[in-house]
Image 1 (cartoon, one colour):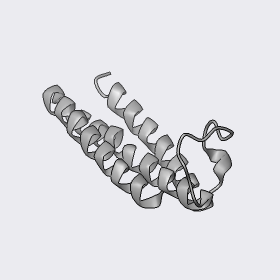
Image 2 (image 1 turned 90 degrees about the horizontal axis):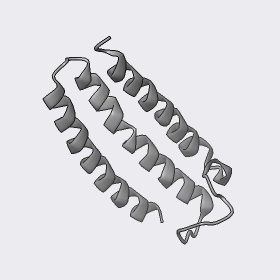
Image 3 (image 1 turned 30 degrees about the vertical axis):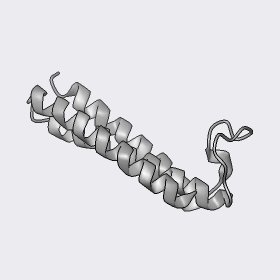
Image 4 (image 1 turned 180 degrees about the vertical axis):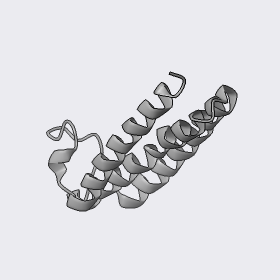
Amino acid sequence: METGLPILMLCFAGAILIYGALMISTGDIRLLPYNRRYSAKMTERRKYVRGVGCCVALTALCPLATGLVGLTGNYLLTGLTFVATLALCLWLSTVIIRKFN
């Protein structure tokens, strides 16, 4: 029962990674939620969707790393991993989306 939450986080990360991979591979604007109203200016839609897909896949690494560390049972290290990877992934996502926009 101790490994239930890490396994759930790994499944959640896998689902997000699949969604990001679909966005990267297809570049279809319909995969973005609220596709009728865009909050960002975009010059090329396919390029923008691929950038968002990269950010989604990168952000999925946070629950992936946290789930893997959570399997060890060390809760302090799991929490620190979550905070550190979330900050790193969000910072890298802002860098990537600026590059693709």
